[in-house]
Length: 278
Ligand SMILES: Nc1ncnc2c1ncn2[C@@H]1O[C@H](COP(=O)(O)OP(=O)(O)O)[C@@H](O)[C@H]1O
Ligand SMILES: [Mg+2]
View: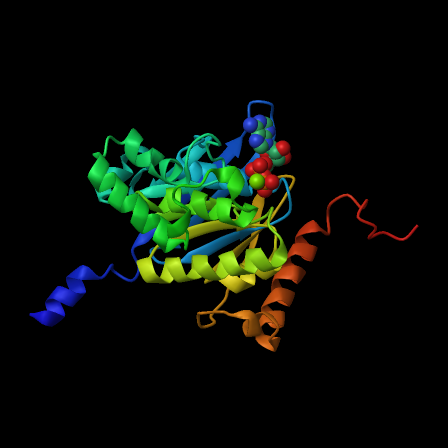
């Protein structure tokens, strides 16, 4: 009986959380932001989209979230159309590059916003806000205004707001890009912990090779003009990936693979980066 219960309570190992089938995007002005692509993100993966500015990372994430419609092809979440995700018993949250907090509202009210919008009653909502703030280490700052917090703390508030609805899929668009290196490393570590503890599926966007190696189970390398996937790289390393891992030989080997992929991907592009001899 116990074996059966355990099997039921765990997700099937190969359940596909996000699937793109020949999905592509051309904006009305003619920009080919994404060529047709097939991609499957398995439940529980920490998948990172890595590539230079303009390669379509945000566009791809927006297609997954239903913030943009594909020009063709299909996007599915747990086998359903994006708008029908709730019927699958799953929820997604999107964390933007900026914290985008309401400056006049307290931290707890900012985090409660998605619950207020969903009509969750106050006592229940307050309890979930407290838990979400605790999860990002900000329990003591519930009564503060955003401007009283550092940039890193504001991003934590934004992540707490993303977690308060208890999503199973977290889509994050360069969430730590504006932070200093050490703050970023700390938030990377905290995020990896949350991902593991809650068995989230994460799709994470960055242009940092190092952040990709520190966080991901798999990295999809993209190139621009037109936007497309050029390579994939699995990072089969144990977690937690602490400060020692970041200066290890293994880390450097993964970073080199990703760097080579990015260099190959940009080799055909214009040369104002200084590649060609005079
Ligand atoms: N709303 C839009 N209308 C027209 N072009 C867009 C729009 N959004 C993005 N683009 C273009 O699509 C390409 C991919 O953009 P984006 O997905 O934002 O890339 P990334 O996030 O990797 O920097 C870029 O050339 C960008 O200028
Ligand atoms: Mg972007």
